[in-house]
Each structure stands twice: as structure tokens, then as C-alpha cells.
Image (spheres, rainbow, N blue to C red):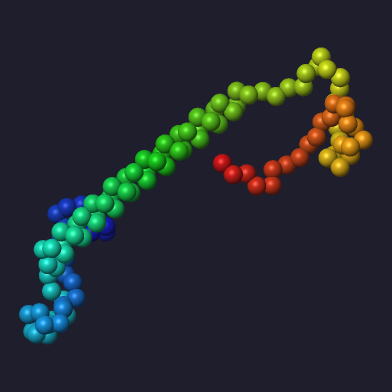
Length: 113
């Protein structure tokens, strides 16, 4: 049903059960029972609904990420010139510069969004 994609579905055949007419005739497959077809159709409908919801959620997440990126572009970080000049240092050398204005650079090892 997933491969066909939409209704009406072509005839569906299942393995013949022991003791059925098809098994007695030596056939390997028989048409699907109505109750089984109804159950499988219901499961297929649920899967289609889940896939649509998943696609919608992914689209909304992508749009939200683009919106956050646009908002982030508006943020400008600038040094306040009214204050004293910041001293560039590594974190390990920060203890000697306590109480002073420092500029520490680094990198992001792992970023989780």
C-alpha cells in the first residue's frame, strides 16, 4: 500500500494458510481477507497521517531556523570605546588579569541547535 500510494489499491495476495481452499489446491497465495484488508488499510492511513505531520513539523522547524538566523544577523557585537581597552589573553593567563578588562577568544567544539 505504501508503494502504490493511493486508493483504490490493486488486489492484494497473502500466503495461503494451512487448511484453506487455496492451500488444498496447491496454491501458494490467496486473496487477502476483508478483515485483514480493513486492518491493513487502517494502519496505512495512520502511516500516511504520521508522514504528513512529520513533513509539516520539519517544514515548520526549517522556517523557524531561518527566522532565527535572520534575527541573529541583526545582532551586532561591538566593543564599548568609552571603557578601557581590553587585553587579549588566553583563559590560562586570566588569573593574572583579575579585575581588568580582558578579551578571550575561543571556538565551539560541538554546537547543538
